[in-house]
Amino acid sequence: MSLKKDKQKVLGEVFDDARVKEFLDVEGNGEIDADYLALERAYRGMKAENFESFVKFFVDEGRNINAKNPQGRTLLQVISDHRLSNDYIKALNAGGARC
Image 1: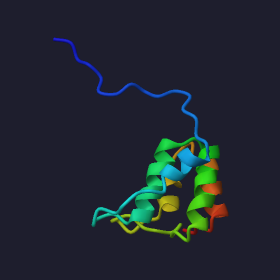
Image 2 (image 1 turned 120 degrees about the vertical axis):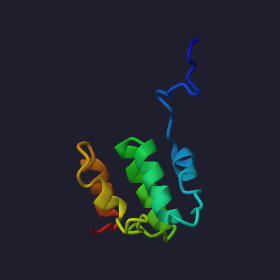
Image 3 (image 1 turned 90 degrees about the vertical axis):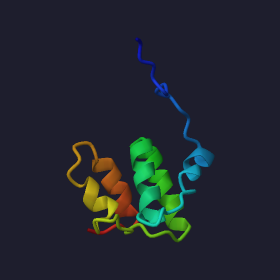
Image 4 (image 1 turned 135 degrees about the horizontal axis):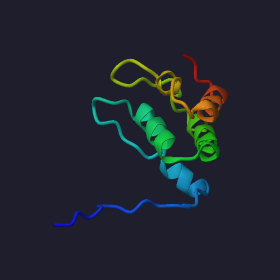
């Protein structure tokens, strides 16, 4: 029996402004704040330079950069101990995120 992957990894995906803005379209699910969910999704799905653009669009829309997850933590708090998060942290700080 052979196992087949559901998805193939997408390499070299182009993140123009329109693609970056697609990450803004997230709805909360009752447990997780929509703003937190959008930030987390962008963090997980983008390179740092694209995430920086996303944060600018996010803030320009008046969204909450300090939204919290169900555990009461902001994305900045969650990623602060991630090994490769420095550029993401800089983008969040530039957008007004605080611990």
